[in-house]
Image 1 (tube, rainbow, N blue to C red):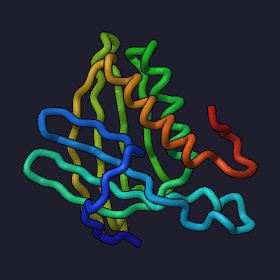
Image 2: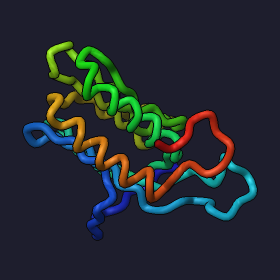
Image 3: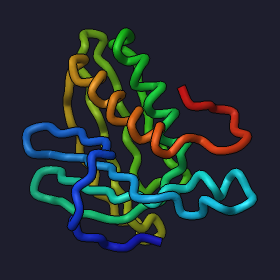
Length: 160
């Protein structure tokens, strides 16, 4: 279930990756079911996604889990010392998939696939380049998200 949401508010809780006018911005809004009995259901976050790749852009609301942000943060931390490593943001619903691969020299390529409504099969795909000097900032942004929306319940992954 995806819907369009215009950006009427600005928040300091986001992950933003940019390169030469291209952008990926992920802004968690709120937990969807914070008071439910099931661990699984308490960890879903309503999230605003903004993407721009070349001449194409869009915004949509997606649902990601707290674990998605934590896993991605932990993988990005490793890229700070492993320049040939990789990281992946791959939520269950696949509305936004980010795959990062390093060249071993400190340069990284991020491949983005934004699919607001996966059942329709409409995807915006593009890539963004960045270097190792930016990974700490992305980890810092993700750390703010994981502190505001920590993993709640019995999961194999824990917040760092």
